[in-house]
Amino acid sequence: MKRALLSVWNKEGIQELATALHTAGIEILSSGGTGKTLQAAGIPYIEVSDYTGSPEMMDGRVKTLHPRIHGGLLGRKGTDDRIMGEHNILPIDLLVVNLYPFEEMMKQALELEKLIEFIDIGGPAMIRAAAKNYKDVTVIIDPADYSLIIHTLTKGGLSQDQRLGLAKKVFARMAAYDGTISNYLYSIDTDFPPVWNAQYQNGRILRYGENPHQKAAVYGTEGIAAAIPVQGKEMSYNNYLDLAAAVDLLREFTTCTSVIVKHNNPCGVATRKAPLDAYITARDCDPTSAYGSIVALNEEVDEELAAAIASTFVEVLVAPSFSTKAREILKKKENLRIISLPSPVPGPEIRSIDGGVLIQKTQYSPESWIVVTDRDPTAEEEESMRFAIKVCKHTKSNAIVFAKPDRALGIGAGQMNRVESAKIAIMKATESLTGSAVASDAFLPFSDTLQVVADAGATALIQPGGSIRDNEVIEEANKRGMAMIFTGVRHFRH
Image (cartoon, rainbow, N blue to C red; front, side, top):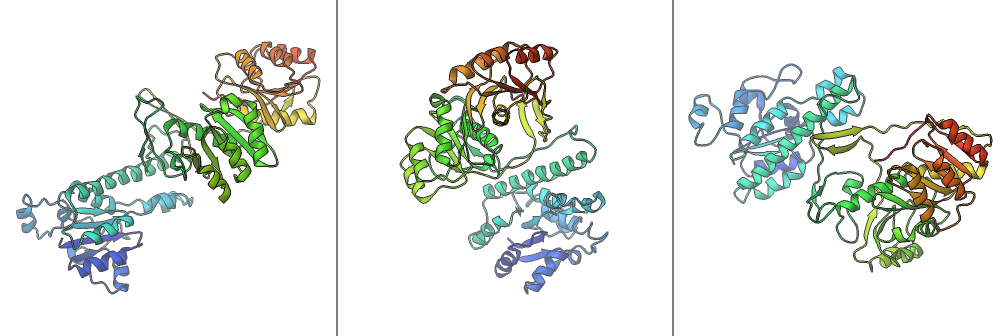
């Protein structure tokens, strides 16, 4: 390695790298901004404009776009030597570049005229050129890789496979960078552009997919997608799906709550003053389904709660924190996956279909609670409705949920008709449904579902309304002395 070009926005670690390069006798070319950092550190370099014979111009928009730069990056050893010599182009063996921070500046709500100046041109052109010519050029775009260069300076440089690996990072970075710019520009005047870009990093291979004959991986650097157990086996494809479902529902509650999920549906939810009581109450909603489930809590797991969880089979336990004694108890369950509750990561919902994807933005939609029956709900019934609808929003359609103010009593999910969901919820209930409230994720097309839940003991029902037979359902509720509320908001979950 004889020559390196350094041109970075993020100056982290650049002095240390440049010092190592200079010590190894490598000539350094540098752009103006990076050069000032090197000059301050007493590291000799050649200014790019001096090397090319062309000054930086247009407020820095043009500085490295020159044949002596790109020829040095693209020139193939043994193939382009003659033409490089004719044009006085010297080979550049190492390129170190990171781009203008468009993504960061985008978050600052700048006017488009100001933001557009953070679209890098010279940087992408150089790193693409170097990556294309990876057989002869090493390209570094991540300060975390500086140590790799420093370590290999005295060992003959990087292998071709290593340079190819760095080139892959370049094209992945460019795909994300250009995709972000495209998405932003399109978002100026539309929610859903004709072209939509996404990139996910931190890919990890999973043991298999939903079933052993399917291959799978998880991608993501934040939230559930980045969750790695602090104890227990590696997460599975199904674990991630169920964990996401459990945490989504858990975030509906601000008081001490336990959520238990099995196969993407809640099978128990409860709020209590103490996490242990919340967990036991939630588990008792459907103890059969709770076996081998995901357990989520929004308060610390203490010694007593850890002992209760360890007494049965739980696939994944997620909570904000775990006491020292709790961790000691849980360690005895070697296969139990322990996850620290991550912060929420806002973004669109994406689902693949044959030939493409569906994208959905879930925005807050205020419910307008309107009492449509002769009788208003009591304060307790209203609290039961609030609890039931929170659970219902996170249950697969058709969804029917019986609840009291602090717990779910029976959950019916994923049926092709609402009556069957109601019957399943009743069948699963482990305590009396007398005086309970019921939530439905969509309107009742007929009065039959109301009849079923009323016969089971429910005295109040909450639903979106909007059926052509609403009047029939209201009439049936009045006959039975039930209170019913229409919210105007449907909560289908397919």
